[in-house]
Image (cartoon, rainbow, N blue to C red; front, side, top):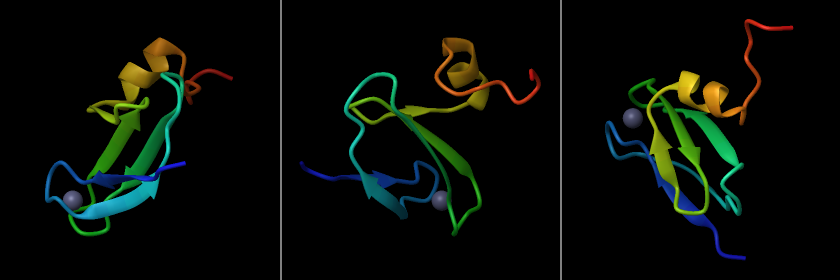
Amino acid sequence: MELREYHCRNCGKLLCKGCLTSKENALEVKCRKCHEIQFFQGPDAEIIKKRSVLIKKGIIPDPEVD
Ligand SMILES: [Zn+2]
């Protein structure tokens, strides 16, 4: 398994390494340098700008609903 590097799209800092194997995999990381929260999704490490996008797709649970 190859680990991909995930970089902050704001400042370029390496946030973490990981492997997202399916479209349903998502990663939420807060950048320790610029404090921006980043979302990555899927094997192509597509950067998601907003949490609401993932909630809408049903990939992460909606914190408002319980
Ligand atoms: Zn950053």
